[in-house]
Image 1 (cartoon, rainbow, N blue to C red):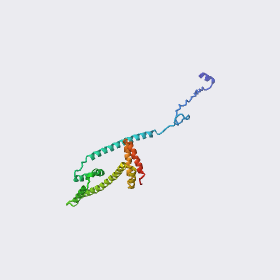
Image 2: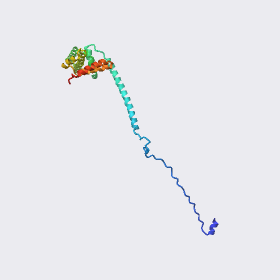
Image 3: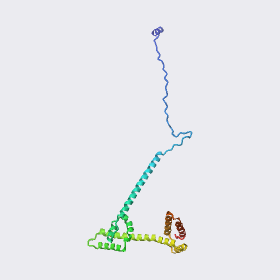
Image 4: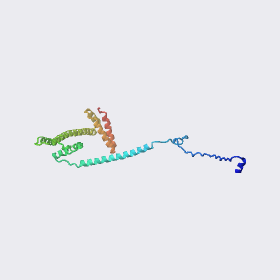
Length: 239
């Protein structure tokens, strides 16, 4: 090689071979741009709201649990109240009745007045007034006790009046319904009661209640009978 170069009288020159490299493109990655892309219309449209539905279901379940808990607590409170009421002994004297009402909670006063109504006689109210007078004119009056006794008398007087009025309002329609149902001539009795202004909404409501009770007991014939009377009496109702 060197000899050949000398012969040529030239400086040896070398050329580096040229290597042509082929660049291999990197592997392409699949990028999902649109999950709802369905040109053929094969797939159903995507539905959202899965989280919302689960939250709603969980909320409904929690509400049901809360409802059951509230109902259980209400039932427990009712049972405790019934036991408490049953544990109260019936007063045997006027003095015991005074203390009985004095120890009754305000929210139970209406119930106890209705339950002990037969004991709240004019004689008892007179005894209560005597106790108020003795306390007022004693040598060392207890003002707190005096105020409580006076308040008790006022509550009992108003309560007895309300209870008696309500009892009359219930008894009056019952007597009129009994008179109407047992009358030999129903039409004549309706005319007589209409003339005396005895046909009112309370009477019609009582008839409806008896009709419903008869049907609930499977007594369809009495229910139909009272229904006819109710419809006839309604024509004479003055509103």
